[in-house]
Image (cartoon, rainbow, N blue to C red; front, top):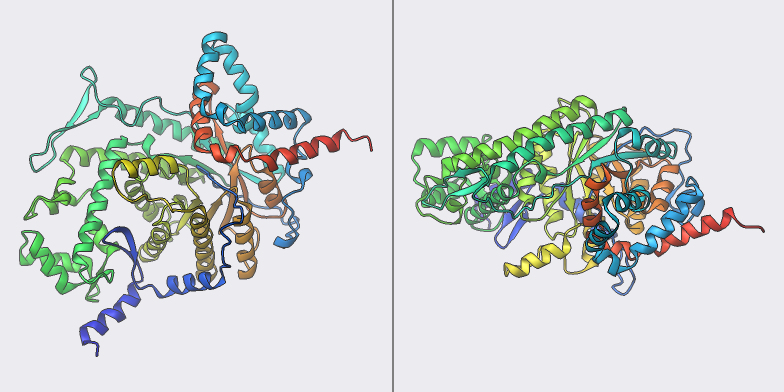
Length: 591
């Protein structure tokens, strides 16, 4: 028979319903009746995957936005939407734009050109000069994949999209030339930090802090541009690595990972929940702590006297900002203690947070939504922590009826499903709107190479089919949650994968969610998959294009990086070219 304590733990577990880390992985599922019930429905509905059937790859770095759709648009059932209609996809293009698109895609299909694009551009600049090279790039690749150089330049593109019921997502695409791995040289002023436990000093480049402050002004301009070109609704994208030193983000991520590992030690039976008795015993084992502090901690972690503590409460207590006050009481200097930030690092982390809050406040005041990009997994725990902080304030249900801040989840990561469910539960506990952009992922080669170098398991799913399943399951989980709990939750289904879009539309139809329901947005990159975006927009769905912009010479590094990251997708654009050629032939047919 179960003891009274075991039965009580089981009953309370069903109320907490959350996700927590377990040894050997970043997160594990605790008891969660509604989330698990929904997951069971999804698993039961999912057809068997034929591993031999071809799948369309999708790698999308960013995307989001929302439009007030024309109520006169025909809301066709999914089965009546045709994604192979060249007129719908490319009918709004001029003949020159059709020819240019065919030429650009045919070049992009040449893997040698994509792989060596940076060197070839450098050679062109050396032989022909930067002026001629930039002019050629501007009227070919830049015009095809970017919206323009400034707000005035973008206006015709955005007007054309809005005429087709498609919203804009603006991203200032100029990228810093600096490397995330740059070391502070002797002739550059550095910020010296003094970690505890006799660790060597860590130095952060002062110049990078000045660059981060400069980037705040750039992102402000992007937010204002969104307001100017799309005053009723709009999105701006930003990268956290532009607002904080990447090495600091990596340090911050290490702290968060070690806090998860500590929770796993306290969670002795692997249930995902810690009893008060276990918390007291483990705290006394690892820390020097008196009874008064223990009483205060228990009240903080379990204010309702449920006799259980979950990971959300635990992580809230041991944030990167408060970690030093705990680790200085460690009985042994282990990984958690060594991850402790110095006083100077805490100041730098707070400055990074202040930059994000400043931009979030600006976005909220302008009626603009912010998409926070996902980045390398070594930075992602810190990014998630910062985004959760923003969401609790700017997505608060007593502040707004719709979310302002969207986090991004890369579904090629093995822990994505569990992270989404944890954050969904966190949003319920702290009373804010959950908002997510869902992508497959953009750094697969980097992540696998890093895992191999560090001799640890790859964080990436082993097969493309597993990534597809994860993506579709997360979309369905969130749509069902929206259907069960009412408006407030919003997701951006950012993918070039037609099958995933069709599945999402089928689920929306089954749940009675209209095409223009604010919970679901669909997005693709500008210059790609117009057959998806324009068809969705013309049938009343919330469709968007991700629009990079900036001066040509500043955007070239962005174009090169995106071409290399999305090389597989660019080499598989046969459908795009076929539809473009079909539309061109229709215009000059003499039949």
